[in-house]
Image (cartoon, rainbow, N blue to C red; front, side):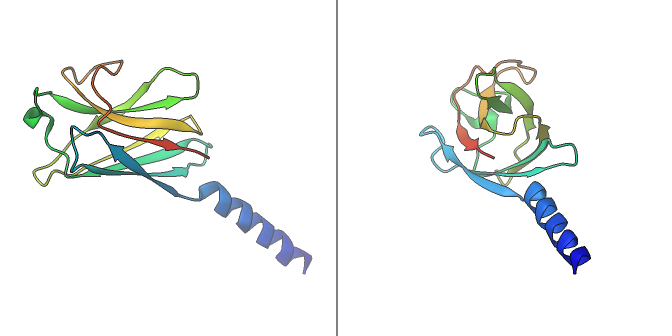
Length: 133
């Protein structure tokens, strides 16, 4: 009985650590048809796995003014934005990006940039949301 209780507690703790969460992204008025979602879960090191999915997001070269790339950023409380990667949009206007963040709670947003190597966001937050633990 004691062994069963310990196993049950261990499973509950593990399930709580790896529990996935979904956050719907809010679209800017400049991309009203765009939809986005972020799925987060914790990895074995306690970092947050982030999976961003977008739909109905025009290619950055189709924007006015045209841009070269979509960049995904995370920003922890009282921290500067950090680039977690470039988001590629396919011919169906869909894209996915998977990355990892050390922040447990953060804002996440997508900008269209002239420079895919940008180290700070310069564009409008086209899609944005907040991930809380």
